[in-house]
Every structure is written in structure tokens, then in C-alpha cells.
Image 1 (cartoon, rainbow, N blue to C red):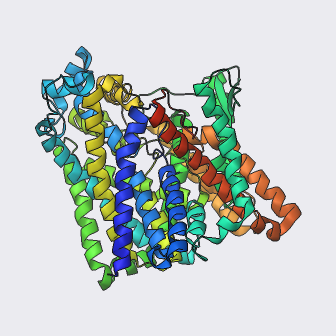
Image 2: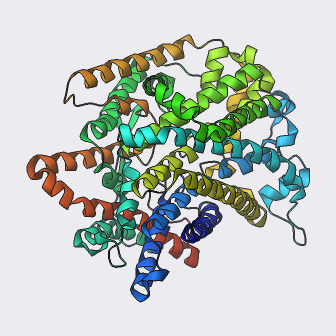
Image 3: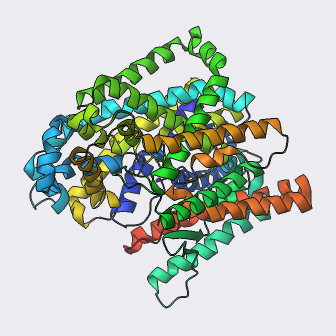
Amino acid sequence: MEIKLWRSFLIGGFFSFIICFVDPIRVLVSKGASLTSDYSIGAAFFYFFIIVVINGILGKINNKFSLKTEELGIIFGMMAVSCAIPTWGFALNLIPLLPGVYYYADPSWEENFIPYINKKITVSDKNAINWFFEGLPKGYRIPWDKWILPLTFWFILIFSVYLLSILIIYFLSKRWIEEERLLYPLITPPTELSKKENSFPPIMKDKLFYIGILIPFIILSLNCISYYFPTFPKLYLSKTYLIFRKTLGINIRIAFEVIGLIYFVSLDVSLSLWFFYLLLTIQKGIFNITGIIKSTPEPWAFSGIEAGYECMGAMFAMILIILFQERNYLKSIFFDRRNIIYTIISLICFFTIVFWLNFIGLKFIHSLIFTIITFLTFIGLTRVVCQTGSPYGRSGVVPAGMLINIFGTERIGNYGLTALGFTSPWACDLRTLVMTSSASFFALGEKFKINFKKIIFACIISVSIGLFTSFFSIIRIAYKYGGINLGGWQFTHYVPYTVNWVKEYILHPYSFGRYEFSFFSIGAFLYIILNFLRLRFIGFPIHPIGLTIAATIPIYFIWFSIFIGWLLKFLILKYGGQKLYKKLQPLFIGIVFGAFLTGGVWMIIDFITGQVPGTHPILGS
């Protein structure tokens, strides 16, 4: 392996450590929104911009000290992968849950949840629990020994999940990149900044790039200043309107990073994202005022189980169509002698996950099917992000809910339902995934001719650093300040929410979800019909992919920004053609970096001043 690649691994590993150590502090102590919570991988954009500037200066001094294009690509990819771990991706969901199931326990939990927990995967020591949420008494040390066993079990699971995710996307990437030519809009900005021409990338010599940075930086900074000086005028970039007899809200929000990224998405795809959001919003509004809704404990079904299962039906139709079309390719690469080690490791990881779930209470057949559903969902979300460029998204419903509706609660049993509750940190609120970040990394690797096996190695480094650093950072913060004094939904509402939906299923048994899967079938049917029309008629304006995530809370917040991005690109192509479109690309790349630079700069300012609440302006704040 070349020495220069070792240099990029070291730098990428260092910044993976910084991201996973700092971002939990940002969320919990400064009480601001995270730069790692979503597919937007904002922390990677922020630190990468700094790296490119420093690298350009070093290149001016002595070019032999500066990083090469492929090295920059590896560094960004490693940071992108690490972004999927410390907060909403996994760690911040997991750590409070392990002692929290006992700390927040009420009599109904004691009877209907606690008895079915496999205590080896939780922290059950009374002092370790109380000190975690209330702060460490003076003179006492963090009881790390109480955490070693549960974190070891969890590391085995999540490392298997992440390694299998990386290998699955390794098997898929060649076809997605070379034959299907997916756009991967999320990598367009770092790709342009990785190019070198006399030390600095060419885009940094374009005035439009800096204009693009200044637009969100100035507007968002004005809002940040207002937190420090309340009399300072504030620009309101978000407003919710109540519709359908005030039974439903529709949010109008300006998210600059979304507008910038959507510029690089094909018009039919970006149109589908906001069109299907509006369509399902109208459907939900009609259901609300006519009473055609069903209330269940189903977790994370933001727009109701009707629209949620329609989206999931569309997503599974998309996944199965893709896998069917790629069956010969996958068979050839899966059994290629050069990949046999990866095939074996993938199977080991898969069954490690299955047996781990079985170990904590889920029957083997349910563990097997749950793991398949989960990874199909991972693949679906990864495909959506790679094709739509949406920096925010989530599945319509979660694998745990689907499994319950397939088998019913009595077949799964109380131990199985409780085990499903513990899938919540890594397989429920899927706002960011290692698989998706790895897909972006492989796409960068293809552009810069980086060997995919080196990318797998780099991903493993990032995952390992990210897990250990995130665990350490979050546990240390909790014991220092007391979890109940920290920001972040996970330390307050996340644990009760997770336990209560499991408890409700235990108390109120459900059978096969005919109602839910009728909407699942509708979504699948609509996707198949629309996909047929798109393939049959050249120029068909709507891509069905938007239906897969339309009824999710991230799209609720960003649909209007997607519409603006789509409209700007439509008008630019219509009246300026490809020439104007290419000329304005630096402007929109600048808008993307400007949004995340603002978040990063004000993150530093908030740390220095100790301002609470934090002033991070990115979506989710």
C-alpha cells in the first residue's frame, strides 16, 4: 500500500475521531442540532472545507507536502462514514437506552417490559444507572466496569451490521456507478473541492462559489446573532400552516443545503419528491376529516400507518425490481473468486446478527426475517439518497413494525417484542446509515480511481474509531453533567417512547396487519405502474422514487426547499440551457458548503461562549 494512502488514512481517522467526540458534546452540552444526524453528513463537509484550504496553503509553500486528489477523496469518505455513528445514526440512541430502561421504569414497565429483558445487553447496576442520569458524585469515578459487558455485546452486533452494510454496497456499487450511472449528488461538492490545479481546486477561483457561500452564511448568521442579542432582527425561514380543518400542518422552510444539492438531481426525480409529498399530504388530510385512519402503537409512522405503508410498499417494490434486474450481475460478483472472502465475511456478519437477535429474545425465524427486512430497507434508503441527493430521509415505517404486522404479537411473544424494542437504536429512526455513507465513498473512489478494497479498509477504520469514540464521549458527558440535565431527545423522551410502544403491543395483542399491508400493496402497485410508464414513455415527467419516502418527517421539513431547487433548475435549463446550468454549478456548490460552514462556525462560537441553546441553523435545530 502506498505511503501517501497511509497518510490519508491517518488524517481521515483523526477527523473521524474529532467528529465522533465533538458532535455528541454539541448536541448534549451546547444543546444544538447535530452536524451528523442525517444523510447530509454536515460535519464531513465542514471539516473537509478546512482541510482543502489548509492543503492549498501547504501546496503553495511546498507541493510535496500537500494531499493529492485521491487522498482527499479518502479523507472525505472516512469522515462521511464516521458521521453515521455518533448521534442519530446509532450511539446517542443506544447509550441512554441501556440504563434508561430501569431509570425511567414505572410500575407498568416493571410488569410488562423489564421481566423480558436480556440483562446482559443493558446496564443494571443501581449506582451506574443513577449517576449516569443525575451526575457522578464528587470523588467517584465513572463505573466503566459496569459498561464493558453490554457494550461488548453491542459492539459485536453493530460492527457486524456495519461491515455487512459496507460489503453489500461494495457488491452493488459497480453496477450503480458504471451501468446505471446514478448521479450521487451528495458527492458533487466534495468532488469539485478535491480537484487540484496549482494547489487550490479550480472552483475556488470562481467568484460564484463564494457568492454561493455568502448567501446562506449571511442569512443564517443573522438568525444566530439574534440568539445572543434578542433585539437583533431575525429572519424567519420556517412557518407551518394548518390545513384540512386544522387537522394537518404543512411546513414551509428554507434549507439552503437542500436547494444546493437538488440542483444536481435530474428534474423528474426532484419533481417526484415534492409532488408525492403533496399528494400524500392531501390523502392524509382527507383521511383525517373523514375518519379513515387507524391508530396503533406502530413506532415512527410520522404521517400515519396508511401513508407510511404506502411508502414502504413502494420502497420494497423498487428494491425487488432492482435486485431482480441485477440478479445475474450480483451472482457473478458474489461468487467471483476474487470476492470469495467478502462473500464469506458477509454471510458470517448476517448470521451473527440473526443469532444475536435470537440471543436477546427473538425467535430464530423472526430474527432471520427481521434481518432481511432491515437490510432491504437499508438498501432502499441508500438507493434513494444516491439517486435523489436528498440529504434528509427516513423509511415510511420501520422493520420492527413490519415484522409485528406479518406475524402478530402472540407468535412473536413478549420476549421477542422486547427484543424488537432493542432494535430501536440501529433499525428504527433511520435518519442516517453507514451503508449510505459508504455508497458515497465508493462513488468517490470510482471518480478518483481508488481501489475499492482500500475503501473497505478505510471504512472499517472509520467505523472502529467512530464506535469507540462515540461510546466514550457520550458516557463521559452523561456522568459529568447528569443525563437529565443534557440536551438531546434521547436522554429524555427516547427511552419512554421506545418502551411504551413495546408495552402497548404486549398489553394489546395484534394479529396479521391486513389493513397495513393493504396500503403496502397500494404503494407497491403505484410504484410498479409509474415505473412502467416511465420506461414505456420517453420524457414521462415523474419518477416513482419520490413515493418511497414522501410520507416521512424529513420530507415534511424539506419539501418546499426541494421545490425551490427543482424550480430553479427547471427555469435555468429552460431559458439558459446547459451552458448556463454548468456555469452556475459553482454557485450551488457554494450554497451547500455555505450552509454547513455556517453550522460549523457557529458551533465553534457556541462552544467558546457557552451559549445555550445552541445556534446551529441546519435542519433539525
